[in-house]
Amino acid sequence: MFQFLGTIYAIVGFLGASLLISPSEDEKPNEAGLLAMENGEKAPLNNGLGAGINIYDEAMKEEDPKTIRTSTSAFVKGRGHQRYGSRVKFTTTFELTTQQMIRDSLCWLVIATKICTGVSGFYLAATYKNFAQTAISDDHFITVVGCLGCLCSGLSRTFWGTMSDKFGHFQTLEVTAYMSPVFMILYTLAVRSKVAFGICVCTLYGLWGASYCLMPTIAAFLFGEKHMGTNYGFIFLVFGLSCTAIIDTCGASGLSFGALNYVFIFIGFLGAGLCSHIRYLTSKVKDEKVLKHHRATSSVGSMM
Image 1 (tube, rainbow, N blue to C red):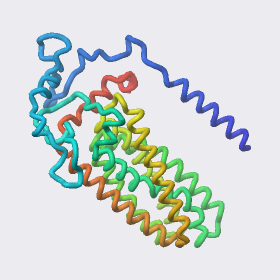
Image 2 (cartoon, rainbow, N blue to C red; image 1 turned 60 degrees about the vertical axis):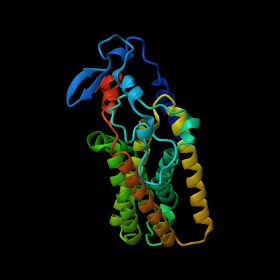
Image 3 (cartoon, rainbow, N blue to C red; image 1 turned 120 degrees about the horizontal axis):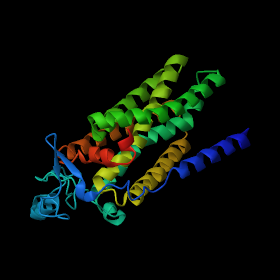
Image 4 (tube, helix red, strand yellow; image 1 turned 90 degrees about the horizontal axis):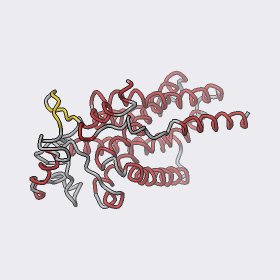
C-alpha cells in the first residue's frame, strides 16, 4: 500500500513539474502597454512622451525621501518603506533583495506574524489524535476527522484566495487570525463531543490554510516580485525552524494537552494582534490594485 501511494505521489509530482513551463514570447505581457487603474478608468503608464518613460518613476524621483516613513509606531523602525506614508500612487513594485529585506524590520514583523498565525496548525496536526484519545475511544473516527481536516486545509486555500480578492489579503488574514484561537478554545472544551470536536478540527485546518495562501502574496506585495523566491524562502525557513523549536519545546515541557492548547491559544491571539498591526501599517498603501493588474495580464488569469 505504501509503495502504491508513493508511486501516486511521484506521478502527481511529475505532472505538477511538467506544468512549470515558461510562457512563449507571444504570451509575455508587453510592459510598455501595461494599464493602471485610476478611479475605475484605464490609463497608460507612460506619459505620452515615449516608451520607457514612466509617470510613476518620475513621481518617485520627485518624492522627498524624508517624507517616506514606515509608521509612526515605535514597533517598526529603521529604513523607511516606500509604500507607507507616500503621497504618490505607485503601481510599480518596490523590489528588495533578500539581504535588503532581512535588514528591514518589516520583514521580521511579517515573520513573527507568520509564526504566531501558523504554528497552531502544526501543533494541531501533531497532537489532535493524542488529545482526542483522552476523551474519545473511537480511533477510526479520529483518523477520519484528521483526513477530512487535511482536505479542508487544501480546499480552504481557494476560498481564502477568493475572499482576499474581494476584501484584501491583509484584512482576510486578520479575520482568520482572530478566528483560529477562538476555535482552538472550542476545540479544547468540546473534546468529549464527537461532532463538535470534528467540526473544530476541520475548521482549524481550514483556517490554517489561510496563512499558506495569503502570506506569499503579502511577501510579494511588500518586498517585490523579482526576488520573491528567495525572499519568501527565507521567511518560510525561519518560520519552519521556529515552529519546530516551539513545538518541540512544548512537547518536552511535560504539560498536558489541555494546558498546551491554552499556550497556543495565547500565541494565536498574539498573532492576531500582529495581523492588526500590519493591517494598520498598510492602511495607507496606495497601490493595492496592482494585484488585480497581475491577474488581468497573466496568461492564467486571461483564461479565467
